[in-house]
Image (cartoon, rainbow, N blue to C red; front, side, top):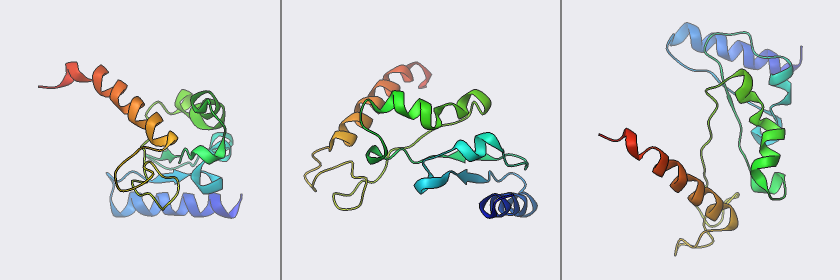
Length: 127
């Protein structure tokens, strides 16, 4: 068992003891991008959720097809997988904006469009 796996399992079990309703988040390697290890050997603890950080510099476009190969496959086993876009800062990487006038980077444009599409699909669920 790898050291990272031992730590993830111990942390997940601690979370379960301290806060039974807590959700232990387990990230992949390579700045939380690569989920191949948890796919091959899932953490045996209750309520575990897997986390990825889809940085644009990890793969060339088209991102969505590449992401499916890199970590999207986890949704077949763990249907609750989700993602979030971040860093809303023009200096820290991976930037969503080029400057404080909020001009989106290529990644920012991609995620903005994706969030707008998802928002339109979810309009029917609003009260």
